[in-house]
Image (cartoon, rainbow, N blue to C red; front, side):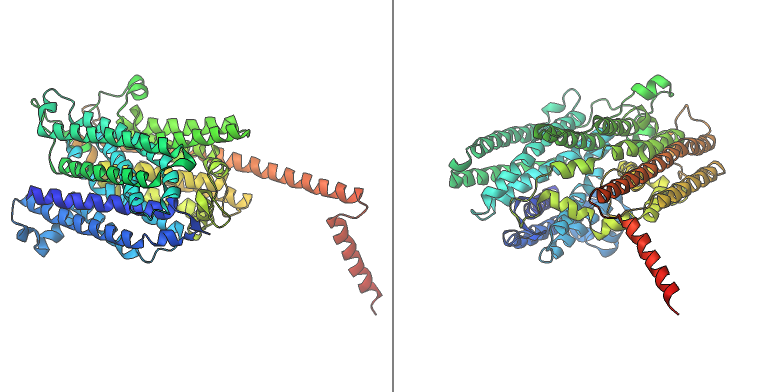
Length: 615
């Protein structure tokens, strides 16, 4: 049974990695034609369909054999329609595996229909979501250092899919298409290798950080995987050395090396499939049962003090990885501008860094730790993620920086990465989301949907749910403040008066939400905080009402600052417009011709004179 489960997991991994690599090659590695797939990229559709089909079969087989393994029954029992339906609708692991299967099936069905680069990018993001979904219910989820183990494994899988998938796709390209793709893939591969090594090291340490763990079969497979990874790194170094030769590259030999690299990667993926199907070794002296670890994956911290809030740290590896990537890309953009001789305002860099630091504090810092155990601290973290940190990020103008530094197309027909970003900014979807009413609905309307339904309690029960909330708070805040005070390009030109009206509406709605939360007489967490049995939190309802008052106090200040900033921007725009009119008037006077306003007044006078002359 286990052997078949490993085989189908292996098919699922190879299929998903090849799918991601193919989409990566179609969307970024090969040249496009004015935002549409080139003839070279269209040749990969058959490969995309085949890899998507392999992923679908492997994922469905994983569902069946995982269920049979859990039930300890033959496969025929697992294939029973009622049993299978219960597994994929009521059990979290089954739901995630079914979600992955649906994504794989969708990619397969879209293989011969995708035509534009933006559609390819959308499918690439979707395929990554499908790939990592089951990770949140993997063996790491039941081990220690929950957020560290799960987050590092998600980063490891994503980086590995880009690296392995990219190499497999390049190995299967036509020889004439390979040079361009290899040059473009080189830098991404370097970033992926760094992420694979760092996340793999962290994950191995989180699972095997006790005496005797490294003498197990599980540890030997981990060591073997590490060894093969180092071999792949060495091959990657040879690739970069060959690429440095430019016009003297021996492409046939280079292609043979890529095939060897792809073969080693296939073996490495097989080892990963075995590791994902087997439990890591159990600790010889397991710690005493802690309900907090069973529910939240974190042991109960001591009673909060200012020192513990500011200096405690419970790393959420996935959020840390996202933040590190954002900082690295931002710093690289600034360095590109500096080497070009251009300047980037220091204030924007400071604003962006402040936003990143606040996000880390609210997710992995002491505040993020205590947010798992008390609603009041959860609300503080929510306010920072949704209302304070986004202001710093928006004022950092990351989109403007990207547009100034991203590479353009290699020829006049190619859209390139910068062109793809511009196309996304001017798409119908972007125009819809930047509507101030839509931004307000996500910013304030989602509060009622989250906290006054059973959704909040359900999301708090899992790491994936908690992560979803954090990302939602952050994205909703980014969208709202981008529309109101954003520096970056906006597909809509929103009048300042409309912005001020939206800000006043946001203040009113947020105040109403906070008052409603303070007036509740029942708990809204569906028993989550009570199940933690936190000794220093005795009155959960009082803590919930405290969270409502904190939300009111902390929420109004950032919105008020946005109102002041909008008014100042309005005054500056009017001042700039007045200066423009004065310059235009002076220029016309110097050239001996009237300005537009004078011409219009003269036109009105002529009309009036004509009316008087008519009988």
